[in-house]
Image 1 (cartoon, rainbow, N blue to C red):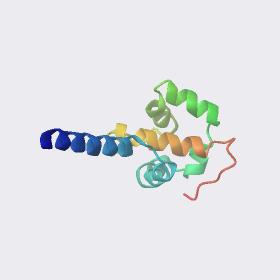
Image 2 (tube, rainbow, N blue to C red; image 1 turned 90 degrees about the horizontal axis):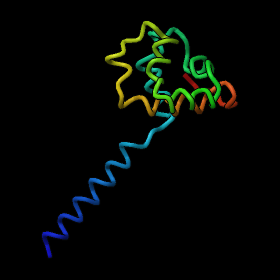
Image 3 (tube, one colour; image 1 turned 90 degrees about the vertical axis):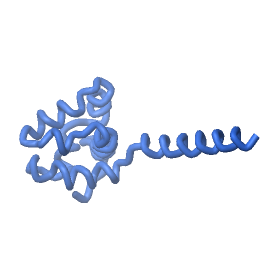
Image 4 (cartoon, helix red, strand yellow; image 1 turned 60 degrees about the vertical axis):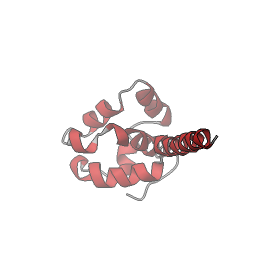
Length: 108
């Protein structure tokens, strides 16, 4: 009985941590943009995100082409450091929330 309880507790703990890691955040994406992309791109995050509408950013993300689009807009970016797969969801949320048709203006 104790063994089953321990297994259930571990499964619950691992499941809750996985859900936290998988959630993306526009605020985190904004911070990542400022830290990893802004200098290499030479434009602020609002200008970068405003390159597309929300529907266009969604199409890019759905097509798995976000990394390629970032490299297209910002060819000087160091892809190995700034475009790690763990950052992509946060970048996407940032770009989507501050797209040209969103009405939102980021502070970076």
